Image 1: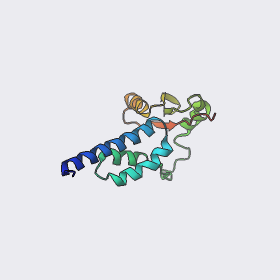
Image 2: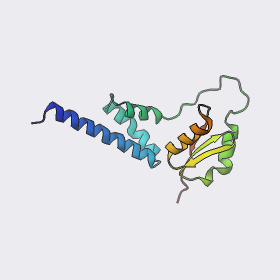
Image 3: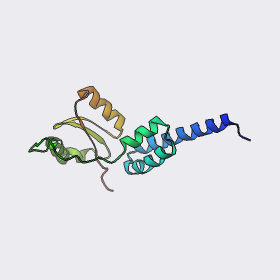
Image 4: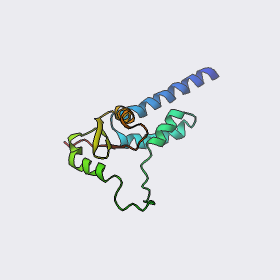
Length: 134
């Protein structure tokens, strides 16, 4: 018969294993799969701050209408750079500030750190460049 302590320990181990599974998907650039798994784990582990955070981060982006009345796309330079150079970085996360490349790496954590070191709290676009089809 299991004690309350062993049940709690088993649940904690399972929660950590689920968290690692989600992180592994992200690290392997399996974003679609991570986005599908994240809400399932968030519902399963509502008390887990790391899992809840990843579920929030992995939510698909929301397009917000331009309320500032800007005539040009504020990301025009970034998108232009991606059209011209993005194909050189298949499977990588790319951090851009304007038309300036900050970092490109398959590991999103390294790219985010480089962007933070270079520009602090300034807005930096981080884009995932899909791997070239084989």
